[in-house]
Length: 463
Image (tube, rainbow, N blue to C red):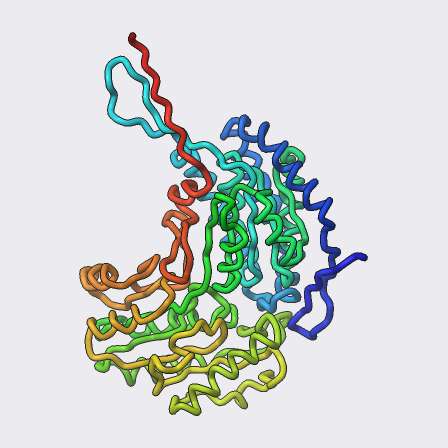
């Protein structure tokens, strides 16, 4: 019996894509091909691997016109923003290609007469990338391109909501002329994914997704001694100091809170504002948030598309309702957004005050277009509240004082500290998190470390 995975479009609940789930013999054959191909791929000079990856990047960018509406249909990204994901994909891929020679170069300790000593970066083997739907190209490229550059072969399993993205990756690498088996994709069920991991078919699993799913990945990998990289949830905070440029902070924090309908692991979900600038910040923030246009992502005028599915929107609605029932104040009227309909994935943005950390909206990941704002008296209070979370992906400080930002950043438990920006991944810096946000790192030269293993050479030349 053939089983299928369906991509249900949030635009109209239609089946946008339907693909058969691989049979288990197909799964085993795909991993075996990857294993066989890796032996030759690792011997391919880095310059050749980099050149092929570069051609694949060009091939992907050439598909932008098709990718933009596909993203809208698959996960609700407004078409006016779709090309931005492709540009981000290209930026990250090209940066990783450019730093690969440095990242993969031999490490040589101080010379000792009579010896040749160095540490070589060896590929792990077969890398399984399990990619999410919210930034389906940006998240996948973080591991795929550096894994290939390092001499690994890659198998991509993409989320059901973005099935076609895996096919775009396959088409790009096929056009580039990668040897057979070096890059492949599979449509898998959750049980098959766990079975492949638990059966040791891969040497490394790169997963981006929810905390519960991350735990399931670790459980499947337990005892297999395989490498696991996890980028999980976030509840990213921002702190606005009294010396901040308020117009700049408001514009960027509104965008950081509501871009992609708030469906970003590093999106802003809670904001702490110094009391001295509380009212002007709140007024400006609410006014700008109220200017979003909620509607079909196929409409060029739309600036806020639907959430990926109705159940996700309903979860955020329940979180907002619970906060309001507990005393929070909602500053935006959903009736001002005609497309907002209970029981649908179309959800208006919401700004809440009167919130505290007893409320789910300030502690649990929302992953939707809602943000809570709290007034604080000083830096110490802001630091305490920013750290009061089981997550730790990014934190941003909005100030004109560089030393203050660095001092606060030293005390905040997070993977990335921003000053006067948010919701952006710099490919030259390591992308990593702490606590329930996961473990491991991608991007930068550091990102190659988890995709390779060190192999030491200790060669005595004089006897």
